Length: 135
Image (cartoon, rainbow, N blue to C red):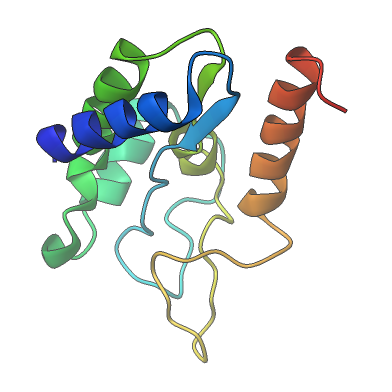
């Protein structure tokens, strides 16, 4: 994964140059123990939320997402120019108790529905665009 991230960022720099605005979103967390219930109902700290997500189905390796995101961040930002930014979707999504409520009819444990966390990602993206002077 590290090699792939470095190759992708090198290609983006070669194709888009130093003046491009380039925003990459990290991988948001999967839903904890079940796909139809909240992982938690009230405020929790980041470490507790990470532990709850990591307790999910082992085959998805959700507990390794912070590690994977760190690899992406290192490869992306290590090769970055001023116009390259990372949109952290993992941390704010992790702290939302509503981040994966598909219900019994839609037990999807990784994708998101609107309204919800995606709306927050859009606000983060918009804030980044405004900060760079794009309207």
